[in-house]
Length: 73
Image (tube, rainbow, N blue to C red; front, side, top):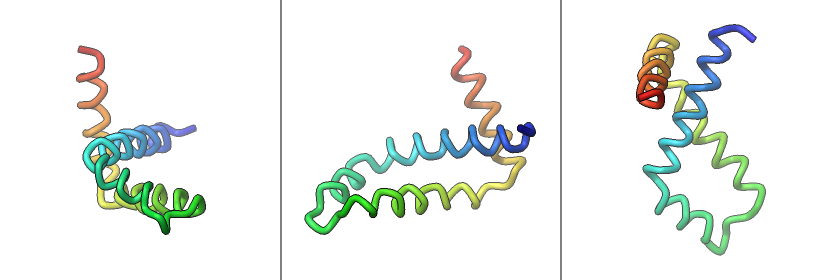
């Protein structure tokens, strides 16, 4: 796996973690809605992952390196 692929995967994971923390209440409301069905989970995850495309490879790398330094401290 190339370092670009690793960076993209690490950033995607970090981005999804941050989204779920930030939108936890909203996600719980959606998840508990009467019309929320099991197949909607994949669509919701794909929608959240789509947000990563807003960030350039350089931005993803920069966020990843900052996140690594914070986790090592």
